[in-house]
Image (cartoon, rainbow, N blue to C red):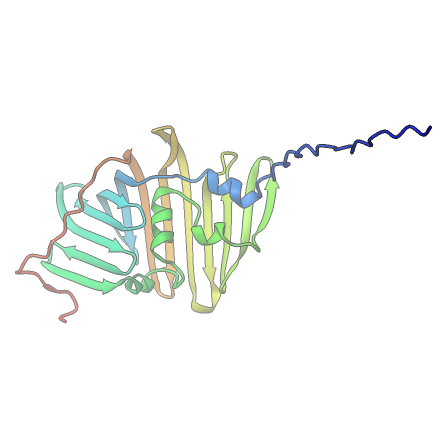
Length: 246
């Protein structure tokens, strides 16, 4: 007699293999250390020099992230508002209260004083001490680390840049140069202070050169608030006339 037995199929359960987390690249790490906010407001003792003409002013700054920058400028000695401005991604409006004139221009008006590649998001980033978004998106950026600090350099459409980060991955120096158009911009950030568990530079020094025009702004933030409800009042009185006569 031949004994027949049923053959059982051997079933091997394949256990899912845990995916190895992909380590973040350098740029992702830098992005995670930038100041994240909805609204930003600050008061700054400011030295403003345009083509060598220097003035001490008090600047009140309000930013609605990605939407508008509101600025009120007061003469430090007189303690009166002398100018007000609103900058959006596509326009610039300025009230000159000393001369009762106003300016309404497209955002490109700023190119008379700085690099043509500067856009609204770049300007906003500079005022809060962040690295420029365009640099953080540059896949061809070159990284170099030295004693904990990091240099990031590269070229964005003929705009040469160099960004220096400290050990906290915060921007402490930015250099932009467009040699073809004789334009340069240098920004230095220092004396970082904690605000709502986030680091903000209390000192921002900006120097811009565009051919024969030079602007230097030294901001010392004496008060900074984040994510507070803000208003951005701006209206042009009827008696004001266009600064350019148009």
